[in-house]
Image: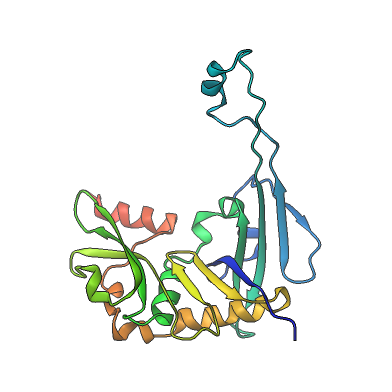
Length: 238
């Protein structure tokens, strides 16, 4: 039996009702190519000199440093879920996530999946932000899996933004980290990626997190531009 290699993936859930034609920013520059599964977009940026080449050229005899950098991007859109509740997932590679419209991304998807999969005693990293006029951001990383209490998180004064740790079950992933996007290390073959997306959706919709992490529901950041504008209009109304 062939061993399935472990891969690192970055997965984003798109908001309900978002279709392929609404997923990207205008002028995203990616090209759709034929795909055996899902809808695949790829892009190759031209080679350009790094920003530091001009500075470095002062140290060469002829003032020339012939160096170029080049980046590439890919986004694979996969539909998953029940027939009447299909959701679109974006599997991003390279710089592909920059092509997605920020408004189509389901906020806190990755965080919710992590907290539904990782017990309070198997946390590795917590990122938080203070709920004050001046926002102070904080990252606490442990050298090994640790309990929630070790991270000194004040749930009444801080907003949990990102979490990482070791899942209770290795069936879905060996390691998880999540904010809006979900980053995972897992043994998954390309022809099983749709099934993996369905597992991710079930984990997102689960309520296990409420046992030890219910405080994430106390305050939830708003990410949709239209809703932000509506709330701003109410807040600053004369």
